[in-house]
Structures are given as structure tokens and as C-alpha cells.
Image (cartoon, rainbow, N blue to C red; front, side, top):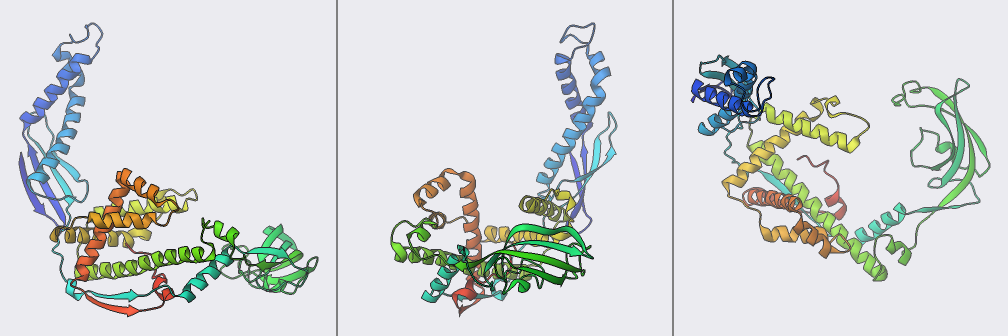
Length: 435
């Protein structure tokens, strides 16, 4: 087999491959002999069809199958021989496909770039230091209570944070419009669910009262027929309900799976969850800074084929997450290209760090991570056992641990400064995780 290579760009390769005719003909003969043993031809017993008849009827199709298989296998042999790392399937251009002549074709494809990761010492990382203070815990308990708020009938005028039960009819130019009417709607005043002015117009209303609200839809409203239009809502308040926070009692604790220890036990469990969240938030922010630094210090050209593949994967994820009857190919590729390029680039750089420093998942860290994950559940022992019986989940944990070891390796040489901050600032989202 003859192979010649031309580099057309930094990553694109144009490889000419020649396969001896003898290899093609031997494979064609082999296929025809297999066909002769099973083919049924009128006038001949099974397995007794003359080879001349088999060849006449089936040689063309057998040759096409052989050519396809030989191109696939010879391309693989060629890239192994030339020590190339293709980033995607090749584009094949035939040169000589004639019977009796050597097969010759051109395969054009991209290769992954060669990377020598460096520049760790130029990376700057701000590592946050924080803890869960009692005031943070008290604030979290208030949040949990508000998330489980209930409403009780109140014999008074409605005020912000109250829930009102209303019937309403919306009209534009004296005619009711689609989607503008409802009965028995529960609305918390001040929640911002309705268009500007609607909720404010019900402050002070009592049960049984009717109010007419003259309002306008926002200019940027999603329904273009109503955007910027003046409308009139006739609203009847049937109930005014005051918010009631749940007590910190056994019934409330049971909603979170806490059946023992009373308020002290509940507070301790919430504190543990907050500490887990805090640890993960700090770890994520450090990781993002390290990854940003690796990208800045190691600018690489990324194969288009790898970006396209990642774009398609992100499209599929978006469809699974948001659904709505969309198909992946209906989502514009441009929406995902920047994120895809970042992911592919980081994947290549991180893999090279792993290779350069001969990193392998630390099984002690793997065990610790599984136990930490299991600690968030009521029966952690069962969760740990489930992980160790599930190869896919174990591999995912090992992958996360290996990535953490990459971050640690970079931090050993990077410029790291520690900064003491509040719990709120530490857990505040720094935007969606980019990787």
C-alpha cells in the first residue's frame, strides 16, 4: 500500500492512498465464492451455480462492497502507519476505481493539533475563603420558610405580599381579547406576574370588590398584537389571603426528611448542605479561572470537524432540556459555536496536561467524592454501594476527580491569592459554568 501526505492547512491533511489491484481482486473472488454457496438461481441446485453465472450476476455489487470496505480499512491502516490523529471522518475522492488496476483515492481530513501545554506561571487565580456564619444559617432558614409559605383568608384590604383570588376580563377597544380572561386565578401582589400596573391596581381592594384597570401592554410584549396596546381589565376580587410562614416544628422538619433532633438537628443539617454548596461554589470559581487561564496561555487551532460534532451534541442537550417539539437541526449552529469551540479546546488542553504530568484518578479522592455525594441522601450507605456497582457512574466520578487533579497541578505553579468573603458573595453565581 502506497501513501503520500500533503498538509494543505495547519490541520488539514490530503492523503493519497494506493491499494494493489491484487488485494481488491482477492477480496472480490472471496465475496463471490461466499455468494455462490448461498445464492439460488433457477435451473441450478443450491451451491452448484457455476462461478461464471455468479460472476455475471453479482460481480458489480460485490466489487462496490469491496471497494467501500477496502477504502475504510486502508484509510485506518494509513493513519496508523503515518501516526496521524484524525479529528473526523475523511472526505474521499476517487482517482482510479477501474477493474484490474490499483485502487487509488484521496482522503481529505483534519487532524488534532499537537499541543505543548505551558504558561501555568502566568495564570492568576483568586481563591475565595469563606464559612457559614450563624447569620447566614438564619437567613437560609427564612428562605426555606418563605418557599413553604401558605395563605389564609383575611378580612381586610389587600396589600403587597398578599395573595388574591380573582376573576378578570381583559378588553381592547371594547372587545375581549384572546388569553385576557380567567376565573379563580391566584395572584401574589408584588410578584410581577402580570403586566405593569395590574398588581398595583389591586392593592387596597377587599373581597367582593370590583376594579377597572386601564393599562397598557409593554412595547416589548411577546404577543405583537398586544405589544404597546391600551387595554381595560375588569377585575373581581373573590378572596384576600394573608401570607403565613410555617413554624419551625417537627411537621416542617419532616418536609426535608428530618425526623430526629428537633430544631438543633434541622439547623445542623441545613448548615451541612450550605457548607457543601459553599465548597462546590469556591471549587467551581477556581476551576473556571484555571480553565480561562489555560485557554489564554495555550492558544490552539481547533479542528472544524470537532467543533461541528460538539455543536451537534449541544443541540441535542438543548432539545432534551427545553423540548417544545423542536428538532436539534432546527437550532442555529451559531448559537452553540463559541461554547463548542471552548469545550473542544479545553478538552484537548486538559488531555495534554493529563498526559504531560502522567495524571491518573486518585482512588482515595474518588472514594471521598462518592461519600460526599452520598452524604446529601438519607441512606448514604446505599448510595455509595450503588456508585460502586455502576461502572458508568464510577467513570464519571473518576473523570471529575482527574479534572480536579489537573486544576491542582496548575495551581501549584499559578499566581494564587486568597480572599476572605462572605458566604453570600462566595456562593453568588459567576454565570453558568462555561465548560
